[in-house]
Image (cartoon, rainbow, N blue to C red; front, side, top):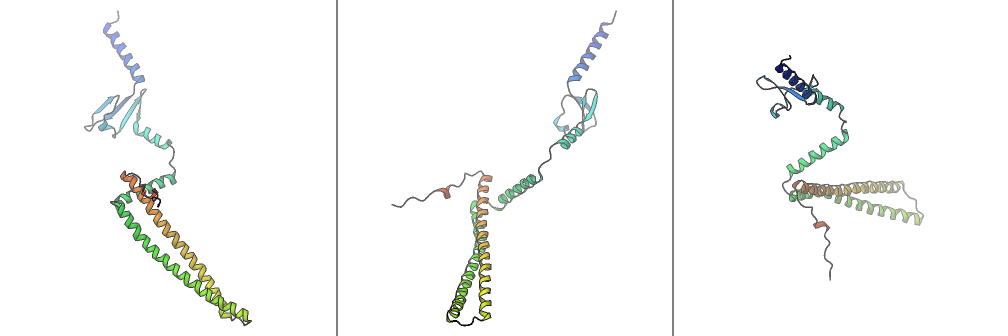
Amino acid sequence: MINAKLLFGVAALCAAFSWNAEAKMFKWVDANGTTHYGETIPPEYSNRDTYEIDKGHIEKREDKRDEFKKNAPLKDPAAEKARKLAERHDNALLNSYSSEQEIDLACDRNSQQVKARTDSFSMLLKAAQENMQSLQQEFDLRTKRGREIPQSLKDDLLDAKNRIVKTQADLDASTKELEDVKARYATDKVRYRELKGLAPDTTKNQTAPAKK
């Protein structure tokens, strides 16, 4: 007759194998070098070398993570670069300014430099146009009287036209630069309010009361 204890041991062993076939077991080594087995890994050992026991096979969990990283979809380099630039810009805003007023002051300083250059181009353009007008009047007067047009006058007219074209291009570029500076600081101010958790500034959207 089969020993009852033997039957009980065999049954317990079979149950253990059946349970292990479904449950996941992990193996890890603590700081003292002692090996442990269990269904979960203590948090303090999650970053150490651990192994998963799956159906009698021991697999290093690091390998699974490496495989996941290998098969994970690649990030868009352009999008990742844009994200890092945006993050760097946000940090610069928070580190450079302690209030919105400081952003306004920085905008004024940079705008004044560009505005001075714009005003200079505007004055040069006006002078070039007046010079061109004077030369053109002399040219027209000589033509009306049937007098010979000297080559020097023709050269001066051509130079005046070229100077007007160049100065106008410089003025347009400087004007656009001034607009870009103001727009950039306006955008920075909006972003600064967002980062600080402040409500949007709606004062610029308010219309002045109608005069009676």
